[in-house]
Amino acid sequence: MSSAISRAWRPVRSLLPVRADLQAMARSPRRDLLAGLTVAVVALPLALGFGVSSGLGAEAGLATAVVAGALAAIFGGSNLQVSGPTGAMTVVLVPIVAQYGPGGVLTVGLIAGVLLMALALLRAGKYMRYVPAPVVEGFTLGIACVIGLQQVPNALGVPAPEGERVLLVAWHALTDFAGTPNWTALALAAGVAAVMLLGARWRPTVPFSILAVIAATAAAQLFHLDAAAPIGDLPSGLPAPSLAFLDPGALSSLLAPAVAVAALAALESLLSATVADGMTVGQQHDPDRELFGQGVANLAAPLFGGVPATAAIARTAVNVRTGAGSRLAALTHAAVLALIVFAAAPLVSRIPLAALAGVLLATAVRMVEVGSLRAMAKATRSDALVLVLTAVATLALDLVYAVILGLLTAGALALRAAAGQARLDQVDFLPELPGEHSEEERRLLAEHIVAYRIDGPMFFAAAHRFLLELSEVADVRVVILRMSRVSTIDATGALVLKDAVEKLNRRGIVVMTSGIREGQRQVLDSTGTLDLLRREGREFTDTPAAIEGARAYLKGAGVLPVPSPRKPPAHKPSAVGEEAAR
Image 1 (cartoon, rainbow, N blue to C red):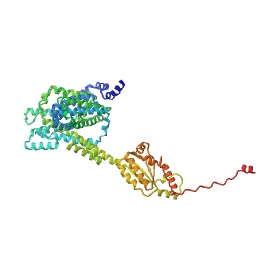
Image 2: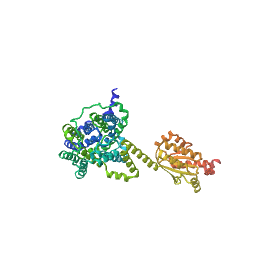
Image 3: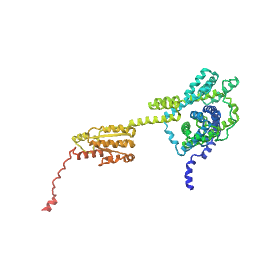
């Protein structure tokens, strides 16, 4: 019993914090503390803004940044990752909040947390690396557009119109603004966004977001700008954990959104961890442990009034650039934000919504890497198509549907490209003809034998074209298939090959093969193709042996002349024999 428990516990134990995490935190605590403080300053307006955008209020964003930020730092698989509310997650949550309210968010968060922990136990983290770069870039571009459009009502100072489609909401907000323009809100939003974008070019290490928000808040208070609506009252502290809003009746309808949240948290977190590894030397994240940490964070954050969270690429990048070396930096970021929640809630509540809209507008602009988009668009037509399709689907449909559509399109185009590499080429076999042959015999062999070399994969996307080409072989007696260059073969390819051989046999054409690889025999055997190829000894190890077998077959069929046996020379008795005969 104890050994069974030990075996069951071992996978879980590998996902939990280890002593090396504490040792890393003790190496350079001053540098980590400074990095964490810097990240907290950058994260504060983002947490407030994403909380407001989700529909649950600024306090939800702060609670998420504190709870999820601390737990993901402790249990996650990266030493440098910073987690909290993000724009991508906000996009998913808006329709959930609109339809189900806080109870729906809590339910989705709990289910998503369990799913992420299950993915970690199943060791699914390594599979995230197979997401193509055009899908990621298109997804990011689409999210940036959605975040920007979500901020239009607050940036224009008009009430947020009802609806889930951001394009329609932004259009209605523009119409309302045209009827009753609020130039104060527009000026605050534009000013904050301009300060952030221009300041980042001038001094990238300075947290211009918090400086711009402070300036906008001060201006709104000093000049009594009534048109600049503030965030509103914030609670002085985190609420106690509660399941009061959990709606068991909505579990079935919220399962699909929960899967979307879990998939998004996994994708964005592992992408962020990969980016962090690339920005440093010697850091390597554990993808399965990262999934487990995000699962724990998403289980806990909604219980404290927060929203589902994920790793934030922008905040993680700031963490790395300011010298963070361990999890202490992310923990410091969460602690500083918690201090703000407890000590400065009245001040934070005065921040104008338009200022937060400006922060998120600038964030959306900075999410778009123009150089990466240009490079991806120029790479191949397939990459450009996948990028544009994923971005448009993200904007018009749903994030998860967009990723699925992008993956399916990328997969279909990749299959098409792979299928195009499969070739069936006729080759000259005479240079490899074994033995000495007269010109007449060479001519007869060339008339009755044709050799084809199969290059590349034989799978479902290319198999039928292969069958068509092979079935149109001219009227010969023997076809030699050289299969040593077949890279892979699936059941469809094996069945198509079997069909082609049977069609040729019905036409009286014998098919011989050479160079079948050991790794491909199982699929050929399971479909009965190998038995057909082996019939009457028609499978050979190499091409010369196959040509010799074809030559022997043609002689047996009377196509090639069989040389008459030579008469043995007359026996001459030796001198000893002659002497004995006498």
